[in-house]
Picture (cartoon, one colour):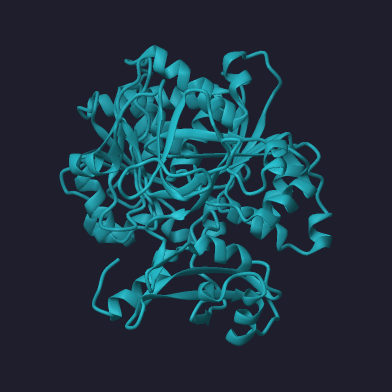
Length: 517
């Protein structure tokens, strides 16, 4: 295993990472952890995240990434629901969720490294292992390396975002050797890493992980990058100019991103964008949300025809893919189903829709393993139709078989009986002069049931008003799609990837109406 992990001024070789993972496996085994058990990992992007994940997987256990933004109540639910037998956590996160830490579950504490402390403005006094707690590094040193007990680890159990109700853990069945190889080829293709995984002598890859590894895609991508022997830079927190700096410094070749990162990169002043050399880039892939066509086109013009896209979900894996040339020929598409994918688009009565008509997307990887929603078989049953799975996305196919996303069904607003997809409006909102970012969602309305609300972050030094925003939108979208309410905030709540926490903006409207979403 060649390559390095890099974070700030710290660096570890991948052979040393494997050493730590096998020591972690030995330590976890000493705590009684084995096949099918859960290891909760509440860490930002750090070496220990991969050490703990790999160590758990080598025993056939499930690493369970925990969103470190969670409140005590949310963390308590997840620790209990997944049945965590050990918790690995950054030191500074303990005070915020200490009462949620189960009394009978070992807690292993990772010192919060300086680059993370700087990125999140954490008091250095909170970064050390607290007195009376067990430190991760010292704990690892107490064990000899333990060879992997399983050939194919089951992978991480990722908890869904919980748009409605509590999040559910997506728990994949341990793959057979044949399924693991098929997954390697499929996922390796969409990540641009397949040749390096199958051929260790292939050209060297340098990549960055700019998104938080508690999310499904960055989690899987980081694991594949390590398997490919890549030099892998962990960005403590996504920052558009810092990403450009890292690309130039390390001569980065591959990155997985989300559309919000594109938006924030394109908002940088032209002189800042031109300041950095990004000519080393060879393969960019994005997913996780619809990308406004004008944003994607601008990125292709800037970085070249190296922007690839896939569509999938934690439950299904990657199922649809397109490269830049396919996208330019079919603007707005997320791609065509891959060869090992069965895809149908169904109406509310589970009938196939006509070409070009939106419906619920149902898919299945014909070469993939199965999954369950941990401790919630009913949720799986509700999402399945004739062996195909829907995760709530609405879309359509064109005459060439290319798939287009409209939005999440849970995001869809029904106003006066009309279905409205906020993603379409958000794409136009980003074009409005003076708008740095914004989101659109449904709020309660006595007359129509739901009305549209837009929350806008103005560009620095810009003053906007609701009438102007509505007028600009009215030039490009139908009148019934123009938000009834337009509000402004100097800074929108965001995840580490830069993606807006839409749920935090939407919840107060429904709570004040005495309803939940």
